[in-house]
Length: 352
Image: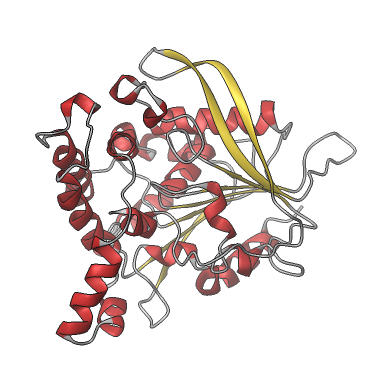
């Protein structure tokens, strides 16, 4: 039921596979005895898709690797959409995969990586964003043999991870580009929205501590809160300018869509509970370009967070995209046709 709404947080506009210069390669990396922030230990699998081949310089340092992190509920392969990969990965494009080694992984708890719905359900370790980033780092270094990243780019949750990459591994990358995020503890309406989703599912009479046997009615409330936060009022009015069209769009966009697993969904949103880069911003060494959109209801510009916090990042810069006919609210993060020119400038500025 709510996959479409989750895509507002993850990847916007998936229609078909993109046609990058180098074909994608999929794999799995087993991280044995991974220790979670909770103290629990479990061997986990991280699924990934890569495009291109890594290149190392005479000193043995990887020079062309790009990490791209997806949003809540998304997967790495979702970046192969025409809207995203179709504008970045092809021959002659900004991240031409005949030149760059692009890493698209399914985050812990997502896609084909280890997650609660694999069997442990609510007994799966209560992972945090710290766990997700550490698992990503192990994949990159141990699994793929990459010892340096040219760029860390992320959308929504992946953008929050990009801030964390910056202070957890400050010498590991040349550049950081978080799209649709804020480098502070999740509070206010954003936190309340996440709690609405979690409580709507956990308090469902049929939840049964995660051992449900039929669809949960609580998914409806979870869907509605996500839809209101992630959508763009301007675009919805353009797509549905009459009552009849709005009712029809609501039915196709919100109601008649297959739901993700409720256990997985609870973990998606609970994982952000300890996210808070604010105390660590001075540790970020790599140039950082943060981009948000003025119609993003998840990170509304009137809060003034990035204008304040970016000053603490030594090589940080913030761009707020104005509302236009092309922006898509929170989903603007997955439309490089809108922000690609800033990426081009940033790559040129951070080239070595």
